[in-house]
Image (cartoon, rainbow, N blue to C red; front, side, top):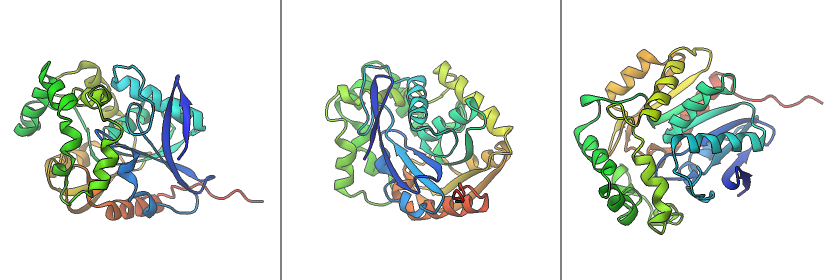
Length: 294
């Protein structure tokens, strides 16, 4: 699988489909990699579509430079990857923080997103009881100096706990793929950084501001088709019925596809259904690059 230089480091990515087609870019979240999309991509392949799935900086097989791994760091390196591949426009597909990065890019760079599909992602800043009590307790602990380091860097809680966020068993070989890029405490710093970015009760302010900006864009961009793949909430799920209703009321140009039970990592639990939903939505909106006539 190819790797390209960006900002003094490298980004690794998967590619399949029509090399001359409209790019469909699949963005993973925390603590996964492009491996998350391995069983989704084959169901989205079609003439006129070029499918790409990068590993975010510091994750998967991408480079691991000495950064703070802020949201801005990820966005800048992702922008550089788009530029390196000459992707002037794309359909963006995101899960978890990958969805947030997709929303952020679409809002910052109008005209570059032909469509947005998302599942189990960060929709808006959270306050009060909008965040389930168990999740609030966990993310509060992760922000606590020393405690978060112990849980993520030393115990590798997020990677080792991946099976607990699924409604179906995770093959041990796939868990090993997620383990491989982060074998040491230092290599897990990007994972810890992501956990501390959850926009909760107004903090961190920079992430809250970005989420508010892309929320305003999502509400005012009916010309960009959007798809929410919603699942009956399983282990660790973020998008319950209340969140789906909020999306229907606050996101312009939105369609919702509804599916059976899945945990937070829905592309692991129900990849074929997710792929079929994306494929059907893309066909309805003619999200394709026609072949060049000779």
